[in-house]
Length: 630
Image 1 (cartoon, one colour):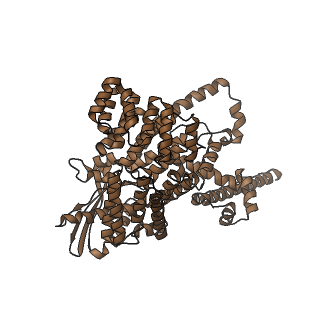
Image 2 (cartoon, one colour; image 1 turned 30 degrees about the vertical axis):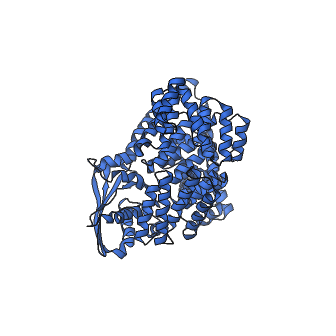
Image 3 (cartoon, one colour; image 1 turned 90 degrees about the vertical axis):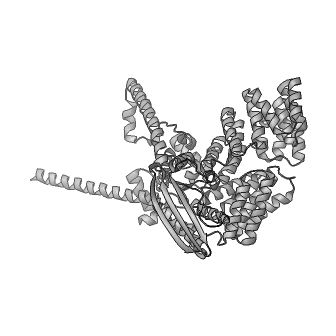
């Protein structure tokens, strides 16, 4: 009897323990789900977790310590960092973007916490550098067993792990590259065909495309190719949609046509799954002209639905909202953007003129104010005009005007950020505005380009290249982005990559002076004397006869000295003297360039001038440009 009673008692206790274990597991699962649902909320607190779990804070703490061996705050941090690592390994965004996705408002704190836990930086994870987790991540009950293994076994285990890691890495590269092609949420909108009787209605069709791009660009986790790059395929020639998608690096392509007659409009669209060459959406819409902006919201919503994107109510509202209801204003705006991307004084002036016409057509068109602000900022910072304060102030006022109309204009935040770091030398203010812009619009290539330049200047080169590549992935045919990528490669000493990038620049805009002068310096570094000589002849500061004469008499050094004495900008003269190794003259010209307001922090960052960083007078100029800490 006693034995039977003991058995029943033991069975009952075991059952009770199993039930308790099951209840603990359910509770822990519930807590984990609550945390996961709030990962992107930096303000999510232990108090909020306790409230959602139906316990007091102290009770939650005691229960988690007993079940999981860790506090609620530790569990939240662990979940955030683990999710961040997963996102990094699958390359779904930059380290900064992922930091925000998992609830870190401070990117630098995210980097510190991540490295403390995993003994590796987020940047290394993105490069697919895999290391063993720290000992704290090993189950405590296994530590003794592991430490008692024979040394020979440790060696065998290490070899197996290395081989396994190699297989995983190589396999991951293949798998991720295929995944990027077939599963990535990405789209390019090709120029719509004008089927109207009037050729002038092409502007109307282009305005439709611009508006759709603006709407879709607001969607987080959807890669949207910039119109600048999609425009390259206005006349597709013999290129198929899958080939175009491969060039632009997208899965989906939207084609369309527009027919406008009197007060009626017909818009036809085809959304194509490019790798499979399969039409996933084909619709024709017949509406009154007055309904066209509402219709564009419907089209954007239909695309989102077919791409299986899950949006919040706010995001749905954003893509339905129109920046302007004036088609004339939209047409002027998109022409202004076209001119602005070509990076010359004349084109910048033309863009200002068209932005102004857009504002005259619609005085509340926030994007047009932001576009004009960027044009004025570029006129000042890029040396197109004498650096008078009025250009900086006009850019600032226009950007603020855009934000007064709509605080969620990423382009306006980018202008402010660029003014802060390029003109006012306020690095903290600049980073704050850049982060606002990126949070609002993850498809703004201009933001990524300027942020990359900023990060280069403050000595964060890995992040800088990451963001420059992000800009290029969104807008691969942008001259402005590629020419700045060239400069970054030059400064990093990657001259072969710089040369290849510069060749693309010369294809996008033939014989642009920026590309020509870059070609000169790159070929000089690579020892390509003949190519450098051709560059001097194309640059046009000295005549071809002067170039030939100087080269015959004193070779490339003579040419460099000729350019150093004849270049229009004192900054360019300083570069040539720096390349010659004549530091005294280089510094003299650099000081004159500073006095004449030619210099920006980005200019000082470039290769030839950085070679003089130990010179005391160079340090003084750095300090005046707000760069003494970098």
